[in-house]
Image 1: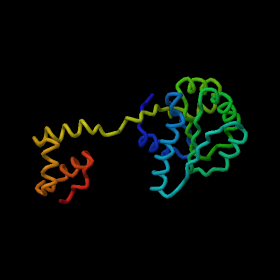
Image 2 (image 1 turned 180 degrees about the vertical axis):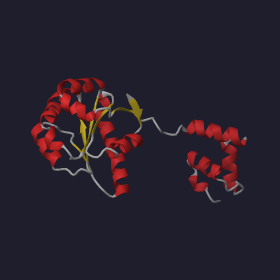
Image 3 (image 1 turned 135 degrees about the vertical axis):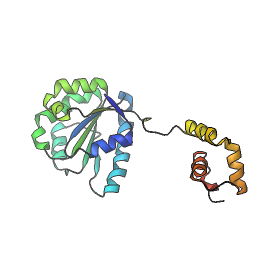
Image 4 (image 1 turned 60 degrees about the vertical axis):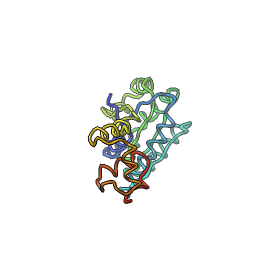
Length: 194
């Protein structure tokens, strides 16, 4: 299973019109991961100017869920956070009613690894729709390691953070993109252009 960060996951989701995917996270993190993915997808869709994101956090009635999914547009994204106890009833019904979802929104089921196993067993036809689109959400993937980058800047220039800050405050720092990045990483973007 491939581990993806939020941005890569949003990108892959939006590249699959009408496609369904499954994202694994720890059971305790399903709802937080759903909120984070929702925010990332909204950002991407706002950039494109099309589609919307809808979270189906309460899947108490699978028939109603299918009805609501069938009303969504193909450019929309449906997020279904499914703890293990909801995977079989919800995915079993999605499996049964999948014909109504053909060409409808992109769907992302967020569940645990045991949830993926339950989905594959309880909903073989839905599982075949998902195909290879099963990813693990790694919130750290693709994020900048600020400490490592600062160490790299220090090594590359022979300066310390303190020296860069002193020069910036005195207005003697060379106007170089490397130093602009450095100041931003130190949380001192206010010193740019001095």
